[in-house]
Amino acid sequence: MARSTGPCRIETGVEMHVLIVEDDERIADALGEAMQRFGHETTWAATGQEALLAAEKTEFVLLDLGLPDLDGQEVCRRLRERSWVPIIAVTARAEEVDRIMLLQAGADDYVVKPYSMRELLARVDAVARRAARPATGGGPEEPREDRWVAGPLMMDLRTRQVEVHGSPVSLTRREFDLLAALAADAGAVRAREDLINEVWDANWHGSTRTLDVHVGSLRNKLGAREWIEAVRGVGFRLAVPDAS
Ligand code: CA
Image (cartoon, rainbow, N blue to C red; front, side):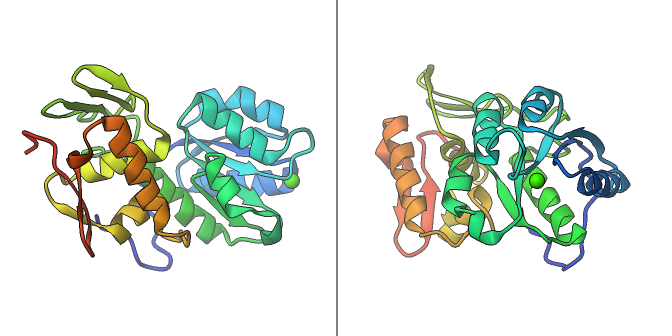
C-alpha cells in the first residue's frame, strides 16, 4: 500500500465532519480554522460530556486529554465503546502519555502539544485513510465494496462484522483491521512491518510480539488456525479455502 512520504504532503481528498474536543477556546478556534481550510466541517466540544453527546454526528475526533470534567482516556474509551470513529488524542506533555494505555483505550494516534498544525493535519489525514481502508475508493461516506467473501469466511467491511460458516465472530478493532489487511491481498504474503504499519501506526515502536498476539487471537476466533499461515522471516498470508 502506497504511503505518502513527502514531509508536507497534505491530501484534501477526504473531507469530514471533525469533532474538536478542547477546553481552551483559543486552541479550539485555531484548530477549527485549520480544519476548515482543509475542507473539513467542525464541531467544538469544550468538555468530555459535550464530546460524548456530539460525537455521534461526527466522523473524526480530535480529543484533548486534559479536560475539565472527565479524564480524557475515559472519554476515549467511552467513545470507542459506541463507535469506530477515528480518534486522535492530543496531550499537553509527553510524560503524561502512557502510549500503550492510550492505544488500548481506542485512540488511533496521538500528538503532543506543542505540535505543528502541519503535523496534526498529516496525522489526521493518515488516520482517516487508514480508517477508510480497505475501501475500494473514496471516503468513508461513499458506497464501496462492502462484503469480502472467501469460502466460509465473510467480512462486512462497512459494518465490520465477520462470519464463519454463517455464524458471527466477534473481533476487536485490531483483529478486524488485521484480518482486513490480510484479506486486502489474500493469498499473498504480507510482510510483518507492512501489517504493523497498516493496523497500528507507522510510528508504532511496540514489540512485534503485539502482531503475533493478535494473529494468535484471530486464529482462535476464526477457529481455523491454518487460515493465517506464517511465512518464516517474512510475515503472514491469508489462506482461506477457495480464497481468490
Ligand atoms: Ca485542555
